[in-house]
Length: 141
Image 1 (cartoon, rainbow, N blue to C red):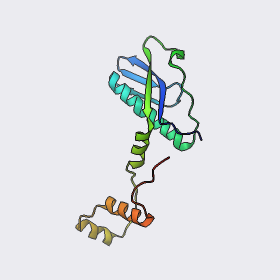
Image 2: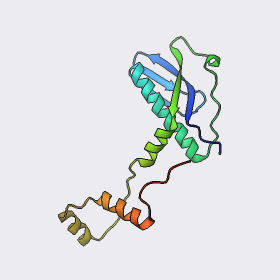
Image 3: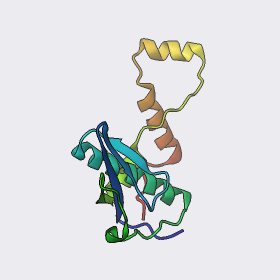
Image 4: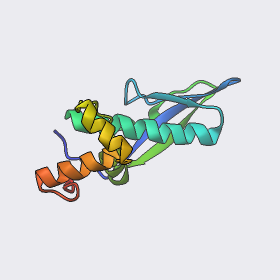
């Protein structure tokens, strides 16, 4: 697996149409998004690219070198826009996101916990941290 970079910059092709702006990344097949306005398309492009690159990093895929923007041919209704992704905050956000888990407990225990207004998520998190002997996530290198 290649080293994880702190920042990536890739060209995106913004395709302007009457119903909005579609965005694709020539170097990142399958990374597509859209927006109703220029600002929304830009924000959606940054988010889509960050998620796509994060997934590639997690899967151990080789991340390609970006094509220089001036070498990308576009139609009259299109424009090349450079999109950047700062990966450290994005990786941290992904590590802290909530994951839904389905579990089973005896009905009598569930009933007692509900009567006592137990926050099941908090109790499970605290119990797992204690069981695993951790208090915070280990930092990524």
